Figure 1 (cartoon, rainbow, N blue to C red):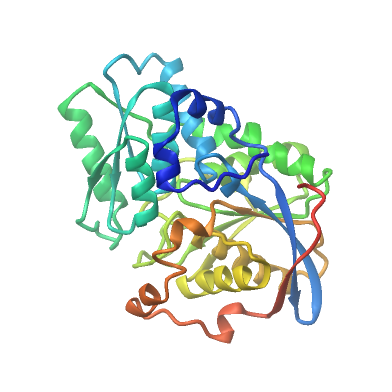
Figure 2: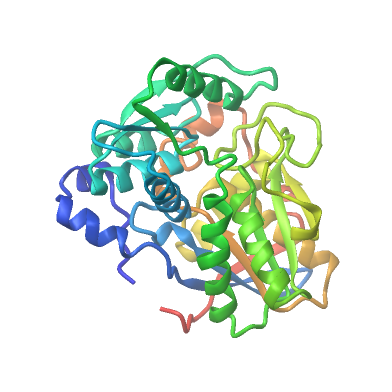
Length: 352
């Protein structure tokens, strides 16, 4: 599969024909094995690198499925404006798919959306609507959703993809992401770690593995301050993970447990992974790696592990990988943020 990692300038230059070609390349992302040395023992972990998708994240799958669903239901016509609340990646994915299909797209975003993702959305023709009033939890999700409702109530030209309740969201991960993991791991999967926001990726993967490999442990990874699993609300710097409301897709039978990760732990794993292996992943992926390390320390018997890495670190050059941004937000990395991990190494992959 072609690794694009396009910046906003590259995206702006894409022709309609090229965009349509790239839409056909969504999915079939690689597994990249690494080794984490935990308590002196080498533990192999496979990273499902969703950042290799054409527009740069696991949300490419979701965005394609959501727009296709609107088409199937007859909700898109000439003059329609697709609208969605997004923290970043889904906005880029929807802008990408909508431009390829000839639809206008309006992204309702908030101040935590990275400059990189904003630039990509604009380059792909999206209109940006910034909501800057936090909701009661200190996040912006409920404020963004209120803005989407306001737009849809104002005019029927707006078509809401509704990533939060549209069954097309988990369905695409049941149909593609889960089967890819199972096939790439030759059916030997002890545990899968998935970051949670809407819950669609976790629900889809969880449902698939419940059918083909019920013994596989499915772990949802959430941020401290998120309420998805009934924990208290609070502020967080992590984007693309966590939510100010419960998921419409998650049921207890679809996953085995959940783990919470803080900003510092997630960002520390992003930095250590990049320094040790050259692989840059986003904050939600750092959270997944942090949770995985803690889980492996407590479960020495687990061998075949997959971490779903939602996007690449290139989307966070102005934040997570920016020393000034980290200082401004009082984020420092301490040994305890890496738990029991002494080293991370890259190993030869048979999936390239």
